[in-house]
Image (cartoon, rainbow, N blue to C red; front, top):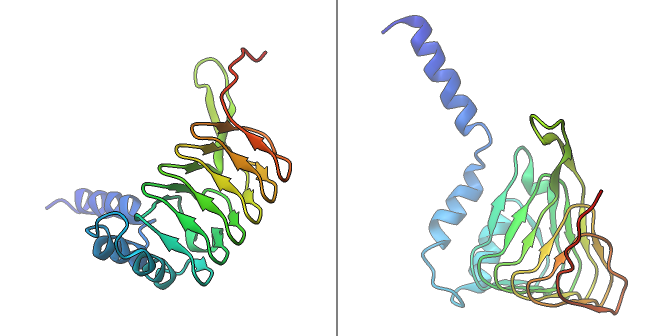
Length: 183
């Protein structure tokens, strides 16, 4: 085999698996087969073994989808007695902080990475990370999307399907989606 081809193959494989977190991959492999609502504390334990900071009494009714590159285990902080329903997605481009007693519904999506708007030829410009914080006692309904840079105040409730693009004051209820053209 040509030396240049072998070097190219090794380089390509390194690029493709360079962000693999072996401990997380093992936890996902072992725990993914569990059906929803079975083994919720086992999932929490597996995620802790993978290196994530998760408080006592927290439960995962399904294995979350976790994305991001680099040291993702240092970017997720989950408090005590939280509850996560099935198919939650955590985008760990930046930090997600979830305080105590937070409940997250089915297929909720927490995103910490976006892009600056580029020129017309390539609108998704440079990566623009921003942290997300869910304060104590927050409840996110099913399929809620939290966008980068948002803080949801303590005791706030976000109705199912809501897209949250700016901070939510404490002890408020928000729901729905208001679409408008932005300049």
